[in-house]
Length: 524
Ligand SMILES: [Zn+2]
Image 1 (tube, rainbow, N blue to C red):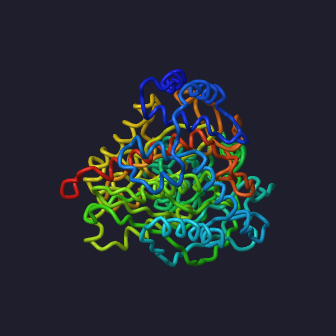
Image 2: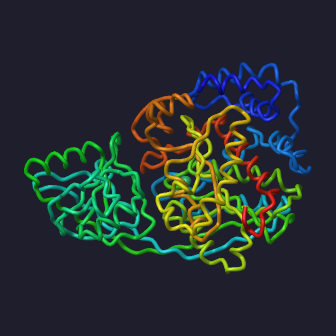
């Protein structure tokens, strides 16, 4: 399918494709190029189409961009990159006690990110509100211990404690999950002995579901391991666990599995957690245009996981910022409300707070939500966050999945028009803020270009690139930058301007289409 993308990018009579080509030409030269064939082809094909002038940023932001053609030509790579670079600067200027720049929830770098976006949005004429809320979390105290009678495993090198893990000191035998070994179903624990430690593979369901099933089966703790993960990956629960939950490298997971089969030595865990709380902020910017009884929310989370968080999620934050700035003078049928959420990475806190504190009348006025979480992955897929595939889709009110189709369809329409394949995310909107909207009955869609590891051959066949990491070292298979503490590499260089432009234009197209879609009595 790479050929299809390259061919269509030759811009034969397709205005959207022409605009996309402009993205390729204005690439900053310093980024890693994991898709040389794709980019070379796009650059080559664009050379004959660059005679059209692109409007200046100032002109774009002061005119009505009321057609896809006008809006898309204003979503420009130089502007996207400048805002992204500013988030890097914010991080660099707000170093934590560990000496690393930071934009995590609860840090000065996060608040500076809020201030930066708020300033730009106010200047552009939006009505800006900063919603402040208190969140509860937990943190590790002391040095957690994990080992067998003859071996102690090194914290952070071999294993990590999950966010929102419970604490505890215990010695018990380990027992793998039954069935697929993932513990995604209660039946996987039919043979489980209460008091044992559940050893589960990283599954096809949410970590919360795996842990909840283990808790119900009486597990004393949960050890999660994933295939292909050379280092332990960070597990983020959205629901506090009552028992210790840790993740281990694949090497250690395999070793534990082997030792279970051989002699099954008792495993010792000693983890102390302390409840914490902090102040967090959601930034809400409302357009002066459009019907306030039919609001389309355009969201991205502004917080990072560790450090700068440039791919996850300064990229998505910048995508919606660029759309908002270029829509500032455009009247629409429905009102656009842009929200930068905090606390996403520590449990969807910001969006959960926002959605669960809407009055019934306010909730009914929101017709749709679109979410941009990671939009510039170097070794990308183009995935649509269709709530139909969410791990917790059964908890959504029945209107959500059918009414979300219109948003998914607009994303598909855009990508089809430029000859790029897009697919529904296999995990739907799980783990991102649109899931919070789905839970209160608001239809939603979104885009993600992937993170972590490991791109499979079937995905390479569609989008090109390399097997292994989606981001970080490409080609490589160490899991990337986003989800690994102490690598500190989710920086500007972890983003690809070509993908960034493509995903941002797709997001702009869908925003404009939904902004002018006629929702029937809040029914898409
Ligand atoms: Zn994210």
